[in-house]
Image (cartoon, rainbow, N blue to C red; front, side):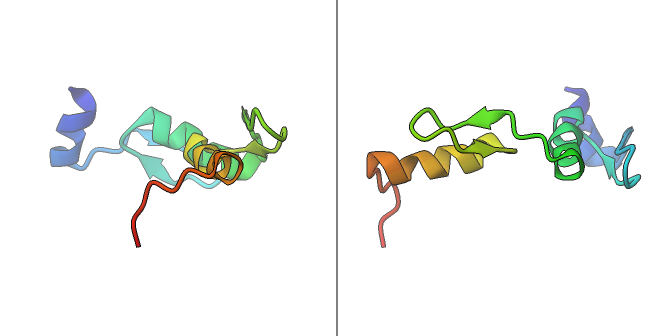
Length: 72
């Protein structure tokens, strides 16, 4: 609920310790911090390639499975 309220108030209480950019949601800040640290906690189960964001890994996995969820 607090995260939603911040969309109305504009409050951004979470600050990146590396570049001082501010965020409404802590999880968003945590994801951003990985751009500075190079941490890649998500690993492809097919080829061991690593990713900093889960969504990028999920897209990559489709190269192995052949899944094409979007229609041209």
